Length: 340
Image (cartoon, rainbow, N blue to C red; front, side, top):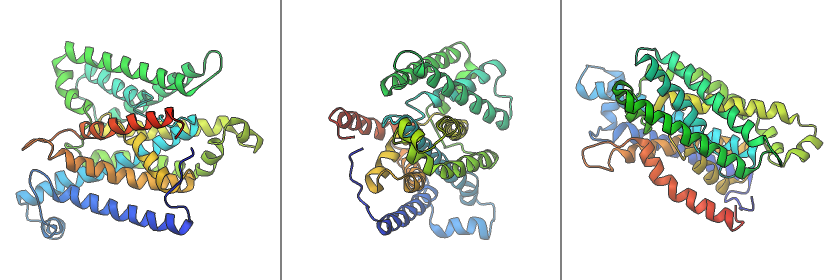
């Protein structure tokens, strides 16, 4: 990367991080307060301090707050997984959605819906998503590594895109031949947090928390790994184990996100690059920045999705795609010009 960071000193980065946290708080407040029905802060506070069971308080406690918490967790997880994949592959276009990891998790869940119907608990769905994400990640890297020259950025992207297309086709087949699968998966496949269930988020939280802590513990290794395999080996880095642990973290974060809200794209590619523009390539700062900005971004995207169409909500995955496609086009153009 030849991009110059906006915040070059440690004091500047700390101040910027405080600003990112403030943005996250504002985004969370907006997610709870605004939508097809707006609330004032006093009503939100009363929903937890003096609950009376009114419609407003019920919406806040059972819909808005769980939705905000879920969106923040997913945005954080997808952004961090994008940072880790880009460091591991040294590919600025790598992300769970572009490499097909999200698609693998989604295929596993849709397959389960097709064969068993919507009769299983969320805990089962969660583990199916983890397995789907893990199998797809292993396949992608094994196929991209095979052959002359080993793994290259173009082989990795092509392999991931092919697997994502294959998974999408199989999902469409299952939904065409089964109305029950269609009803259960269609809206979810667009990526939505509108029907968030707080108990589901709480069930998944320990796994996501462990993955995020592991990611933070790997920051120094990611800095070394980003320099290249030869440099990393020269510095005594055990590259195989670092890559295995990195992939394990990505599978937990991406698979868990898909289990909660379906395959949401572009967060894992947009936020890492925005964070790099702010603070550079040091993963000790890059991961925390990406985690906070990813959470804030998905919260704001979810708020925007409530107003794109009059009196009707759009799945947040559609909104992130609308914002993400132009970003990726610019990114690819900059990479072609040698500016990324």
